[in-house]
Amino acid sequence: MKKRNTQAEYIRRINLSLAYIHENLNKPVNLDGIAKASHFSPYHFHRIFHGIVGETVNDYVTRKKLEMAASMLIWKPALTITSVADKCGYSSGANFSKSFKQYFGISPSQIRNPANIKKSTKNSKIGKIHSKYGKEFDPKKLYSQLITNVVVFKPEKLEEMLMNVKIKKMAEKNIAYLTAPKGYELDAIFKTWDKITEWGRSLGIADVEKKRFAICHDNPMITPTEQCRYDATIEIGKNHGVDISEPYQLSIIPGGKYAVAYYKGDGDKVSNFYMELYSAWLPGSGFEPDDYPPVAHYLNDSRAEGFVEMEVYIKVKELPQYN
Image (cartoon, rainbow, N blue to C red; front, side, top):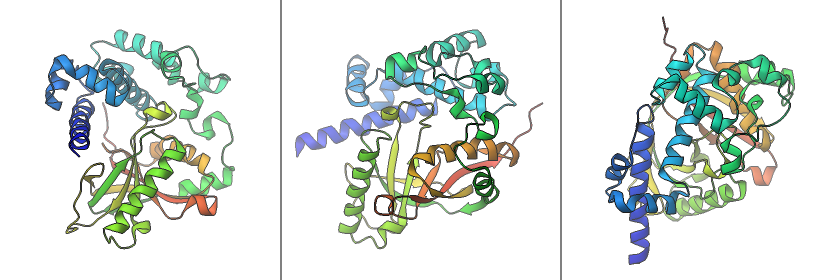
């Protein structure tokens, strides 16, 4: 029991350091500041971090900054490359461009040019994303099929899905969650859902299957699969009276304005659907993503039925005008 409690405390503290990193991606961060957030000694922290997260502190921070930058370059075209560099904590546009190309294998200006992306026929194996994580980075997947002409959905089906996106206000939801151990690896995700669903039933939470929300923290088109973070959650209500203990954790899905899209189809096309929402629907919507990852509300058991039925919630805010 003592060993288990110690392990849970280590994970809790490392999660504090991860939260600190994510909240400060727009500025330079150092080992001492990250270690302080976790209440571990800086001398030992980097070893503990690597042991639990599987990456060095520097690799993790660099990866998260560059992933955020790639998303900004695609989904916030009004921002200059220099502005993106600044918002991702780089001291200059030149340093940013150099780091970006070393990691992804293409420059920020190249990833922003749909004409060049469309002509690209090979996945990039040049950058560190491949040599370090084994991920073949394909920049075409960051764009809508309306631009690349790489057909994933039938045109009429895609048009229908995008036309039916609704803006809704959602109240704050109290949730218990369990993080999948291998990112977006499918078998690990299913096992995580089985575990938290049985846990919810054992506590008498009614209609558990109807209260399942996945929080998808990373974009698998940019982030290596095992480095993605996937939280399986169940809504437990405000006055839940549920004793939350490791490995389960308590959190909230914030209330606010959400774009809600319905999807029913092949499970291996879910990521493509997300990308269409971000690259094809959002630019003409008058909104931009707010500071919260997309949430999936599952409506069926895909293992039993052979297809996925879900609602995708993207927290949004009014699109600001830049001069």
